[in-house]
Image (cartoon, rainbow, N blue to C red; front, side, top):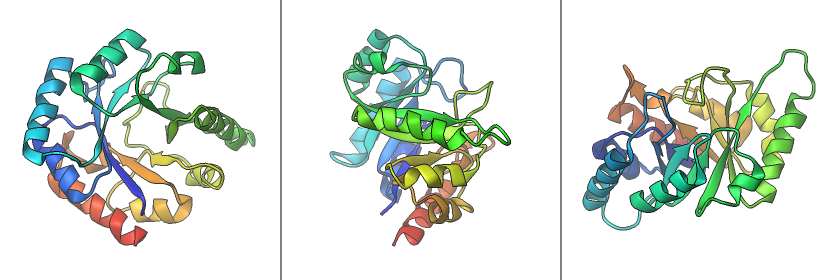
Length: 219
C-alpha cells in the first residue's frame, strides 16, 4: 500500500479529515515566510484539538522547517509533540545529527535540459540521506520556493531513483493525476499539499478524493 502524507495543514478539522481518509502522515509547516506557516502556539493548539477529536493512534505528525536553528526545531518539535521533522532547506548531514527526531529529508529535483547527470545528482542526495537512516521526499526545485509550489517535475527521474530507494513523491500531485504518478514512479509514498486545496485552503472533498485515488491504485 502506498503511504500518504497530507501536508500544509492549518486547522484541526482538515487534519481529522485527512486522518479519517487514511493518511499515514500529517504535515505542519514552520518554514519562515511561506503562506502555510504556523506559529508554534497555533500548531500546539491545532494539534491538541486534533488529538482531542481523533484520540490515540493515527497518522504520524510531521513538522517542516527550512534553514532554521536546531534549537528552534527541537524545541518546536517537543512543544508540539510531533513524530518527525522534515528538513526542506540546505541543512548539511552534520546538522541532521543535531535533530532530536526522525527526519524526512526533502530533495529538490533540479531539471536542467540536456543534463544527463540529473538522475545521478538526485540519486546521490537520496543515498546520502537514506544511508544516514532518514526518509526522503522528492519535490520540484524552484529558485523562489522551498516547496509546495504545486508544480511537478519529470517523473522518470523519480522512477529511476525509486528502483533503488524508498521515497515519497511530491510536487504537482492531484486527485486526478496521483494514480499516474504511482504507476510511473512506484514510490513508497506520495506527499500532497497544493493538490488538495481550493483557493489556497485545504479542501476536505479533495483530501478524501486524493486518498481514495491512492488507495484504489495501490490495492
